[in-house]
Image (cartoon, rainbow, N blue to C red; front, side, top):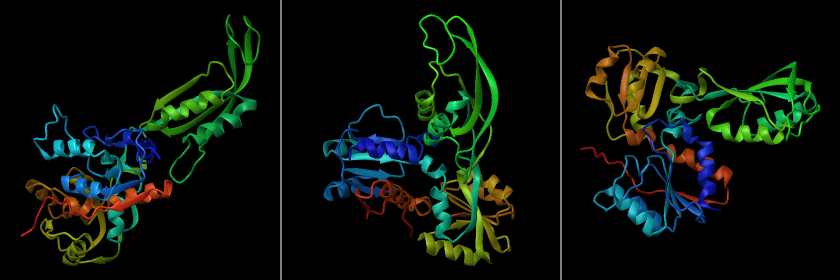
Length: 364
């Protein structure tokens, strides 16, 4: 297949529009028309990982962390990012990254982390907002099924575990066809009244182009009337972090020991012990300190994340056990997510996991 096929699939399966405003997910390096047959999965794209890809004849590196994160004014090889880009281009190795969109998507990085420590009844901690649209259109009664099926096939109509969700109401539409028109019904120059169905459904904003295309191609009218409204609804299945329950309550030190073993953390930092049992746990893979308030509000006994600052530990105030288990340690399982997504869609595409430990932090 071509690189654009893989990139297009990942752009949709892990919607690029879900990423945070500061992020840079998507195709980083490479010719979209390049033919690819194998890929290397890695948390980071370092010079060592690139050498591994070249040595194993992998056409593309698929990573969680983008190699190009900050704007580049020149590429001269003065730092590791520039050297990776230059060497990747010289050796025709493409780079694709799925970062905060992989954190936010349903069953993303934090959900994977929750599975690694055995949490049950897992829910999103901070649901995704401002990414939903409502489509409203008007369809001749005899064409409702055709148009509705096309819109649903394009991805609209999902609410949680339900699909093909929509609403219809009968009414009467009016129009007068002018010169140069080809009216579906009625006569030019005369007002026509048509029995129509008002149809409305919901969709993610990233689906807008495809859904509108399906609507226009399936609708019988020459000029299709439709509206798209932004919604304030939260998406309860996607967002940052997650919260769930341990199979059985454990004391705090046993919980910390379990984390260290399950995540392979070289060191764990934590706030003052509360003296309470740990039952409900909030998680955010990577840098999730900004979600501490949400974790406390959720009623969690502990919040596991990474990159907590000194003053962040004061926020616990004996209300929650704050745990910094390491950025690499809480996100390294992201490659497993990408592997499952890609192999399900492209079962013949050869994928391998990088053997390079890219964690830049060492423990003494």
